[in-house]
Each structure stands twice: as C-alpha cells, then as structure tokens.
Length: 182
Image 1 (tube, helix red, strand yellow):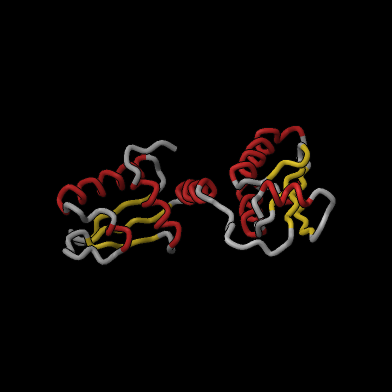
Image 2: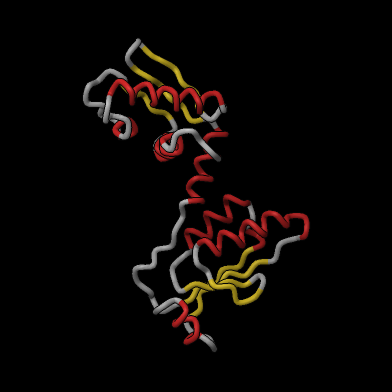
C-alpha cells in the first residue's frame, strides 16, 4: 500500500496494537498519547498533517474518525483497517538471529494448484526471512520461527498445507552452518 505520508502506516499499527479504539486530546500541549508523539515537532503543522492522515485512512474506510467535545478525537479501527495493519506486520516481520539453539527449523509445504499465488507469496516471505531453499517446497533456517510461521499461516489461511519440523542434526548441516555463519 502506497501512502502519501509514512505516518499513515504508523497510525494503523498503533491502533492495531491497542484495542482498536483511541480517544486523543488534540489540544493538550503535551500530547500524552504515543500515537501523537510522532507529530509534535511543529504543533500547528503536525496537527494538520495528523488530521490529513486520519482523513485519508477514513476515506479508504480503514478507520472511523469522530471529533468529540471540540478537543478530543475518537479513532476506531475497522475490520478492513485491521487486515491492512496485519499486512504491515507481516511485511516488517524478521527472525531473531541473536542466538542459535543448535536446532534447525524445516518448513515443508504442499499447496493445491488453485492457490498458486498464495504459494508464491509464502515462498517469497520465507526468502525475505532468510530461509534457505533445500528443494522447491522445502526451506530451512537455524533460527526459531514457530511464532512467525504460525502468524504467516494464519494470515494466508494455509495452516493445513504447512509442516514445520525441528531437527537436531542432518547430513549436510556443516554446509548450512557456513551459509548462515554459525
């Protein structure tokens, strides 16, 4: 999704992290809410930009926006906005590569032909996460990825096509240790 302001993505993510509803005071000089702290450098310009970003999200039917009592704003994340925020989360996903526990995670998948696009997107995501392709539908990584794979499966609705194995040792592991710089 291309946006005119990089803050639009942040707005959706902040709303998704919370309950999906935020009530903010626009005229409080301290802007106590984390969501607004990204907009406070030049208050007049930033308020205007914030309201433009909110209006853009509202026009795209991602949020509901309502001004309360003249100085407060109520923002509610719609289902379409939740889906878009989820997409942002999957785009920004990275594996934690700080410490290797000595085990390998093997992802094996078999998709029906009618969901080829989903299979291709899943493959691309595995490559983005720096998995190594052993075969066309077999990828491996030395890093813990169970939560990330669960999230991706939920996002694409493909859980029944994926098998995730944790393997302690296998022939050829030395080559992959070199490849992952372990």
